[in-house]
Amino acid sequence: MILIRNVQKAFGTVIVLKGIDLTIEKGELVCLIGASGSGKSTLLQCINGLEPIQSGEILVDGISVHAPKTDINKLRRKLGIVFQQYNAFPHLTALENVALAPRVVAKRSRAEARALAQKHLDHVGLGDKSGCLPSQLSGGQQQRLAIARALAMEPSYMLFDEVTSALDPELVGEVLETMRLLKSEGMTMVVVTHDINFARESADRVAFLYQGEVYEIGTAVEVIDNPRKEQTQKFLRREKRKPVEAVISSVA
Amino acid sequence: MQFQFANQGLAWSDAYFLALGLLNTVRLAAAAILVGTLAGIALGWLRTVSVTLRVCTAPFIDVLRSVPMIIQLILANSFLSILGFGASPFWFGTVALGAWMSAVTAEVVRAGLLSVPIQYRKSARSLGMNGYQELLYISLPLAFRTSLAPWIGLVLSLIKDSALAGVVGYVEYMRSTQILITRTHETWLLLMGAGLFYFLICYPVSRYSRHLERKVSV
Image 1: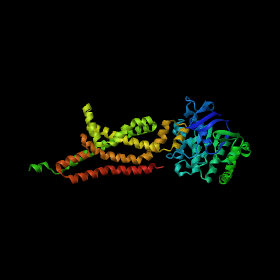
Image 2: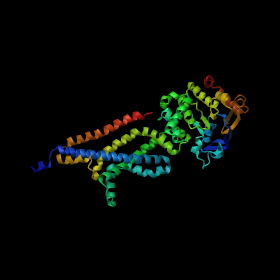
Image 3: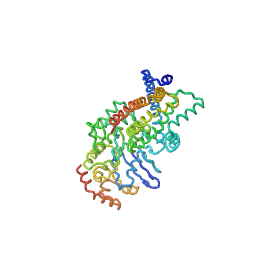
């Protein structure tokens, strides 16, 4: 369980998170939606300690992420994260990308790490690309590679930070497909997305963030189809006016 | 008759003398490159770690980069002699050239490390790597690729600058050439020979670097 309690975060004088409270249960898929600058990506990066917070607390399985005595590197093994830019390590092949952390962080043997990596590449449908460098892969493949890399650490939670936003529209489907696969396997996921259709069909709960606060939260039906608050309604009207993305995503 | 005696022409035994000089040049350059590069990598990394460290190391870098090599060699040689450190000319040349190499390499390494996009470092950390693992497996290999070409430029500079180590008494290739010029007055021939041999050392280095660059390009 991820417990977020009254988290406040500022970059200099700009306050990004103004006291976020959110609980993510085991096995749940929670989508964070909201306009750019509403703090969704920042919140996600706070959860695995990539960003420090000013006050409040984030507990992952009862361990405080930002407490000084927490072994953050150990805790991060529970929290896989995939970012918006495809950031497969460019100097390593697909297989090496996935095998690196199991070998150096989880201290598995070279052979074990490679076998594990191959398993996870197969899982995301890149089994035949293991010898390719990231530059030889499409954006969608690189993003799936990033997912496999995070999964190879066998995390309890997966965090997705707008993973389809930088992709060409025709590549979005394959990445969403991989995420649906994870969901069907019971992975706990926190997904920051602009893809309202994905949120509607896959999320157990949807949280709408507005100016650094959880403005409205509930099931997809409650928040997306029947938003009660004014800013949520405004945001969704704007999002629904972006026809191309919506069509592509519903096809996928 | 006496005049002719002082101007002995080139003999085959001089080729041996020159070959020794050439060998000394290669030895000195190789030692200085090794010492300077290792120290430079450490120094360059330190300079990316914190502002304090960058400020503290700045005088070392600035002085070594901005004062002509020949002045550094002579001054350092005199100081060390006054202080009573009697090292061999080879070790002295290695330390002096190596110090210069470390200063210039440090800046190349620093630039290389700063060029590594932050998202790769974040990804590495998010997988549970600590700072050193991230440096070893991600930042350094990527920095190596951007630093390779400028670093080879420094290596070529250093090979040529090793000719200055003659002023502290190390008989490397340039010094041997000068000794023979003084004796034989075959200035043209000997200098062209020297130029040719420096080229023969440096050209393969730059060819190899191009090959390496292609091999590691991503």
